[in-house]
Length: 624
Image 1 (tube, rainbow, N blue to C red):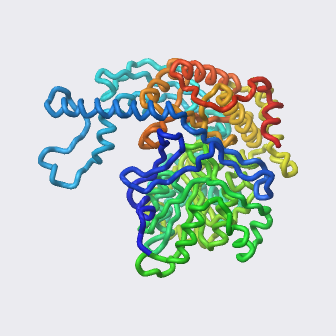
Image 2 (cartoon, rainbow, N blue to C red):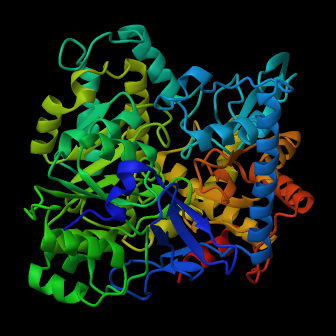
């Protein structure tokens, strides 16, 4: 079997998605490659319901781009490109100074140090709106932050601090899902005590003299939290993926990667030397099997249920081809096949349809690598990620990966699974052998926050019967948040138990998403995802949205190429349990004003009624 274009995709450039201007159908494509990957043309991704495979409705919204908006977006980028070439011409004749690194004339015959298009984009598009990124803050990144004011005398090439601090900016950009990014409270107090006892740094690797009792305590706690045999922690979340995937696969192995996977997964796959192929993200499926059947199905029965299934065609086709044809040229069987997916996709707000991926993995005897960087702590009745969210057995996932940088308010990452897997990684992982051990106060921050989520910090976590937990979460969020929040400082969650934080996050997420949809914005992702992308599309509106929101004391993250497809620019909001209803209403009011000013209310869907925004309507909209 010869290696086709899809084989080359992740070995070359990251896959991006764009939308066609002609008919509004969502497409996917990779820069500098001809092969295109199409998102289904329907507006919503939803699992069949009622279905024994899913314990509740699974609905994701990806509304098509209006035709006029798509055309104007292309026109806008065309104008910027024309003026970019004009400015490059003026720079070539020394009429305008270029501050960015460029190839020298005598280097023209060598391999270029800079990619021509991306360097052009940085010079002429990114620099015009660079003031929206890398803003320095001088406070804890909680529900509110303090920003250091800065000005640019040369159109964003350089910045100068004015000495003024913008206080009380509502933080809608940090991954502080459960509100553990605090400067006071149980986590901060425990980290302070740990710093006094252990110091800040370890100055050694785990294999030498940097293995603390705190590290082993954390690994035991993580394994119990995930429900796996063993776990291993690392000091950097990005390196947890990029340095461990090469230890798990190599030449003669096949990696099947979701088209929307994070850059750390893409880099790890490339470094492994494995053959890499990309499959379509979250296509529709008609699987109708129960959770218990999913765990116990034999190969023959599972094959009969998956055969003829219209969904996950790309993934299943790649698995079938891999088994039938084997490796390119030699046709030898692959040494191993590894499927790599994420829990929550950070730019889409989408949740992986894990039950179907697990079914395919079992049918074709592949391995499954699950990255729960954004989903751990933010999903599931017990905050244990997408596996908990779908009610699956943790043993269904071979390699469970996650980070501590989001829900736990710390840094680093983990790998969980069978003990034999962890023992192997302790010897062969570059992050374990060469990287400095995790800082002791960070380790303590994770331990304390995880114990809070598990109810082992003195609070109780009595789980109600299955099927009622999420409703109780929301009730807790509605009543306890308003009754108790007045006892602490504004935005403080020091009094919250872990279960109350989970309930508050669920309530805030549903309320914020529903209000944005009512206002007429195009919102991507799953209705229960705390990552909320609001589509901007046009390049001129990226910078304008971020600046106008900051004028209204709202800190947001605006995202464009290369983090997103070049015409799918967006603002990304991250909802937190630390946000009060008043903070969310203030942010929503500002978003509405800026949306009217910039004409961002593109949605053509029929808008739900704005009435009934209390907690009971919130519960009603979440139950079937």
